[in-house]
Length: 243
Image (cartoon, rainbow, N blue to C red; front, side, top):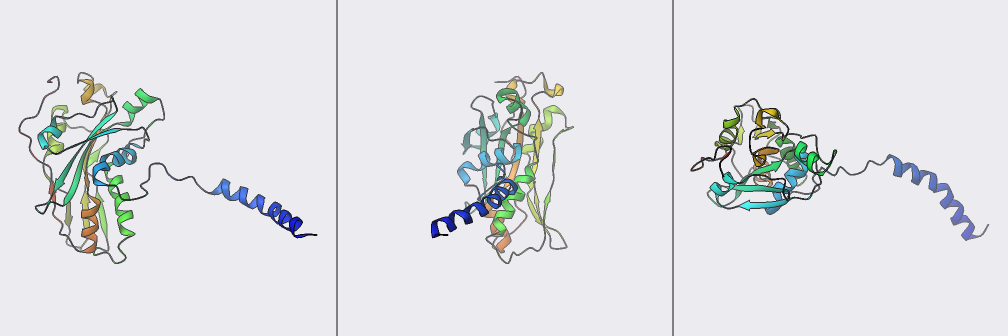
């Protein structure tokens, strides 16, 4: 048997194993973060993770808080909105994202386009796992992601936005030494009959407040302090029907 024949025979022996490996290796999760998101595209990544969609989005990053408050996530585009929260030194603490809900994306782009909606803290947990890969000796042995979100909110419809906007403590350390990372969010499904009289731009939304990866990494390194507060009070809130 010459060398060419030997190599060919060896290849035939390997083919079944290669086929088996290809069949058993899971495909990458399209809704999982592969790297820590950049500041200028953060809410685009959050939209993909939280609403489990790969529909392309337009992102508007607001520098003015009241402009962000007035903005609405719309199906045209689709277009979503982001506001960054900074500490006194100018470092980003967190992000506020006005995103589209899965049900509205499915209505517009076809069933299975998105969803089901997950929670805001799913984004925080994925960011934590990636940040942890770069920190071999974290300052906190235990980190908890506090859920402050209901996918089927029972709040009064006129109070959803104001309640979400109010300042809240995003990070704190409890007496046991556990670091807590809190979220605040809600979903208004486009088809929810409780909001059917609202303008279309007020429905089909998923809002989240999220921790910044750089801030979370600094916490884990022991280079930043907890008790960060994000949120604010706008000058005036529009009511449904106002332009």
